[in-house]
Image (tube, rainbow, N blue to C red; front, side):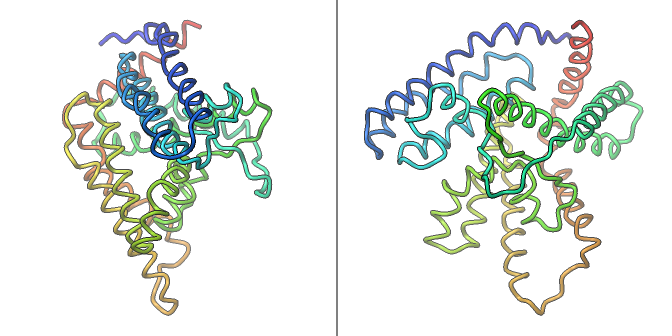
Amino acid sequence: MDFSFSDDLYNFPKFGAAAFLLSYARFASSRLRPGLLRLFSLLPVLSLFPFLPFLFSTIHLRVISAFYLNWLALFKLLLLSFDLPPLSPSLPLLSFLAFSSLPIKVKNPKDPPTHFSLLSLATKAALVSVIFSIYRYKQQLSSYIVFSLYCLHLYIALDLVFFTTAWSVGWLIRTELEPQFNKPYLSSSLRDFWGRRWNLMVSDILRPTVYHPIRNRYGPMAGVIATFAMSGLMHEFLFCYITLDKPTGEVSLFFLLHGVCTALEGWWVRHKNWWVPPVSVRPVLTLGFVAGTGYWLFFPPILRNHTDDVVVAECLALIGFGSLW
């Protein structure tokens, strides 16, 4: 297979369509009062977002742009319709464009400072390079080793992409932004993993849009399950950009299962006298459950039609593309 990342890079000017749509959203929001009328004015923007990622031919850029626009921007614009943060039409245009479509959030000044570690960044970049190199021998490896590499690849790649995005935007606007991953390998529970350590931008956007409204009406357990159900639907949508095939429901089931287990976990720990695992084994149990259910439900839609082989081929092509610069 031959992948040309340069062709996709030439499509970035076409992606100015997203900037135009978001600029219109800012303009319309500044002219209309919060409520259904503002929401109605944003519907043309929201209806066009799903088509923009198809400007890219490579899976990596297609799914990243789909996540940025069809999840983050969509939910943030829905909140903006009712004058809820993080967006505001009073933001300067460039800030509005960045905060509406990218996984970034201004750091709370009351939180402890984030220490940038060049060593950590270099180590993760080196690990990704090693993983990409091992992929050349993928056919000789056992399926469990390949799956372990996929899990490590997923975490490190997302962390690097989100960190690079936040650092670049933070440097441009001279503002400290929150990290989106907080050492998920130290997670002591499912609640800790999903709520405080893994892909925190998603947690931040789902709390006001799904969790809080459902919790206020039906209770916290219903709020948790509904939040994970919505996350499952959005991931199912994103997987369509990866596989270019119809949804299978497995990814939705993965997140629904985790929602039920997370809700039950919260219910269990509220009983102070009930048994809980020792602190030393909690990260192993948590990551084992995430990995085991991921092997069962999360990865099969990608493995079934060999989309993972395409992703691996893109990774190897990326190494070749990078060596040209």
